Amino acid sequence: MSTINSPESAIKALENEDAGIRYHAAWWLGKHRVESAVPKLIECLKDEKDQTSAGGFPLRRQAARSLGLINDISCTPYLLETFQTNDTQLHEASLRALIEINNPACIDTLVTYLDKNIKDKPMEALIEALTTYEAWGSNKKIEPFLTSSSERIASAAAAYFYKYTNKMYYLSKIHCYLEHSNRFIRQSAAFDLAKIGSIASTQLILSAEIPNNIKMYSLKSILNKTLSHQRINHDQDLCALKNEQRDIIIKLDSLVRENFEGTLSIKDDFINNNETTDKSAAHDNLKYSDILHLLRSRSIADRNLGITLLAKNKNFNELNLSDLYFSETDQDIKMGLIKAITLKKDSQSEAALIDAVGVEIGNHCQGNIRRVAASALGSAALKLHQSKRNIQTILDKLAWALVEPDDWGLRYSSCLALEEINEDRAIKILSQACLLEPDSIVSLRMRIALSTEFCLDSL
Image (cartoon, rainbow, N blue to C red; front, top):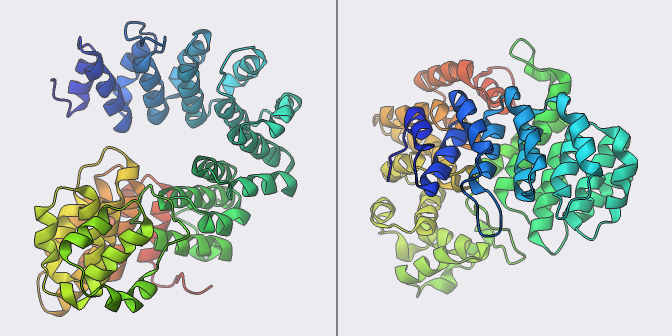
């Protein structure tokens, strides 16, 4: 199999005879946002060789998704041409790419596509695109979808009309979907609220039974949209932030530090650390093998129980959590061990935390272990520094995490760690990274960390 580890090798792999390699190459180019690959990806957008038995074109779909990530406006007409195919999944991929590119030149084509009678037309993505482009002239055609049998389409339509009219009636409809029994509908509603930037929805998103990853994304998107109207930039005083915006930043800090359940939803049986500690005496007969079973569970309560027992139950005080981390291969167990190290504030396990920060991941949803570990390095460094031990290795890893990975959550958590360390070397690392940071929210958080006058607690 061809090794894909650079823009050159990925672009070359698009010519490979193996369809799987071509697909992986297209994905890699999008993940790494390789602008020089746009012409080749446009060619892939027209490729008809890799067709499934159902008639779809996986390579073309991935090429569309990657072009959306690269966000090059020049590919707009080629994405619009895909609407002439019979592959509605390709249509959806192109619509979502066009949402990212945000080129007003495509509005007329989107409205024309809305009028077409196409089986399995991706209405949710289409309505989201029309909302992004503020195509309010299509409101009469969108109105029937408010009562669609598909809650996700109905929620997208409600988001369209909220942006169009600013009426709370439509916002309330989306809020209702946050409480739906179907977790995918709850998650979709959170994404709709993120797209429209409803700051009034912040607390409802936080209390919804959705994964922390989605809460983080939603709050960040809402904050970004509210800030874009204020134009708070490097030359303006951080005190211009409103109380609601400061509150979102504080909540984001908390989510980044505690983001251990990944893509799992928080259930009614969730047990917080204090409750679990109170009940720890009832688990004195548990063995490490029982803890492993808890850490592998799909229940947040079970995982939280296993983590807290590892960190606070006297039966496990002698366990070397760092050694256990390096001996395990199961990612759920490794994540639980990192959380236990964090909860225990075990500065002797900094090697495990450093290793976890550098874990290679396939997408942002897999990045929880890195974010939690990066946040924990702040406390670990403080304890080591107090005992006169060198913390340069930790600082080097945090410096790497601030500039190398394409994961805003990891950079955000690394910022929190360096803010906690708060010594000259940490401040210098933050100052240098702030000049290069492409994400406006992470950049804002860095400036807050560097500020000697601004305090998030002053709400």
